[in-house]
Image (tube, rainbow, N blue to C red; front, side, top):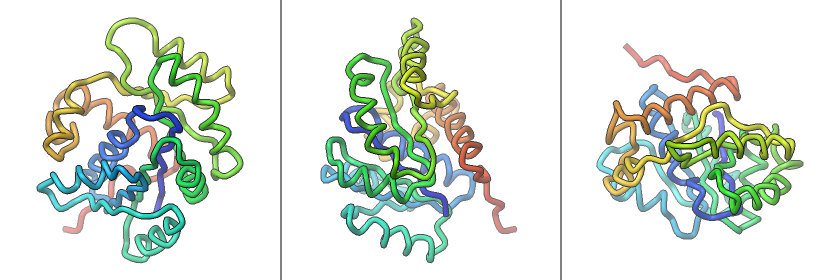
Length: 215
């Protein structure tokens, strides 16, 4: 089982949206996926409540019980676990970083997000198995702000994912329906962004992006 952790000490970076989007993308490729919601606000769990499809499974957990929850998931045959963490809760971020095969740090291309990025990186580094991957999220369609942000992030010594996620209203509409954008608008730009990000992450962790379905 591979484990991804979505960590950012600033709120509003899109951690939950990306976690759920990647979970649905992996399910579509035949993987068995579990989303573990460590956020007391339970946004991922509420999304699961609105959802009509049975998968991916979404559970809530306490940070201190995360490792045990993941061990049970691995025993049950889960292929991919995605841990969604709350902002400004260091214990949750620290526990998630320790068990993750890859930490993803969503970051909007704004000065407010960039100013808090180093704090998140310092929390993750030394606990994670490999260097975290910063994913630029909610990138405006016009302008070069994401390029400037990528340069600033690289100057901090952090790795920027080659795939960024555009600012798309489809994410909000999909969430309201308990869906991902790959289900809500499968041929849209948001869905394409998510699929490209999923492929990039699979390549980074050496995970097969698709699982052969039983005939």
